Image 1 (tube, one colour):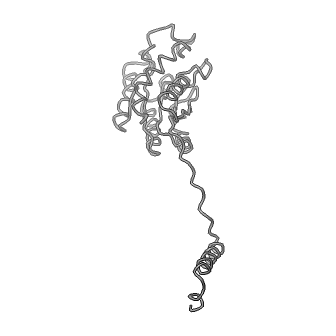
Image 2 (image 1 turned 90 degrees about the horizontal axis):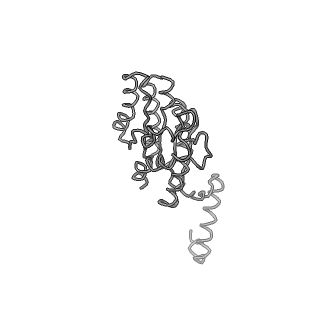
Image 3 (image 1 turned 60 degrees about the vertical axis):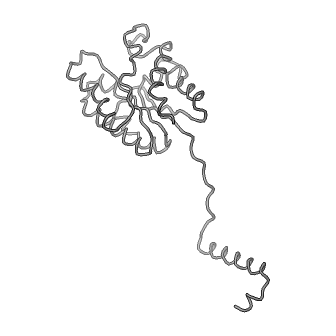
Length: 221
């Protein structure tokens, strides 16, 4: 100990540093990894053909148009469109956990269920699937915008009412933002739809963007 005290202070500090480095090497301890930057704030959209710009160029769809508006209003944000034509709520529920864990979105827009209704699937199944999606999104800290749909009355009053009520009740249960009916601005205008009378034309997409934007914008904080 006396020999250590007799060394110049610079030598003592150097010896201590070398001793610590040797111990780290022996213990297999690596230097701290470089801190990775946080991902940019992200809006992630889970939808079906209505959100996947069916029959159009992707850039013409309401999601792409919304991305442009977000770039103007909220620079630094990005949009990830995870919509798939033909997707049901079951399909969305099957992949939502993986996708939100990968992207870590700030806001999740859930616009599914239309294909469930067209296939006459039990509303309780749709409700369960949508609940799973909302829970997964909230589980990673994301805010949720639930976008509802309506189906033609020929499915019967009881079924159409249960289908529509799913969205309102889930929004209340999970305390999410709600857009009750995506196609509300164009639903009564035949000219706004393609030949299949189901998918909106390019000229209608800005109307859908504006409709969704009113509910989405408050969440971009």
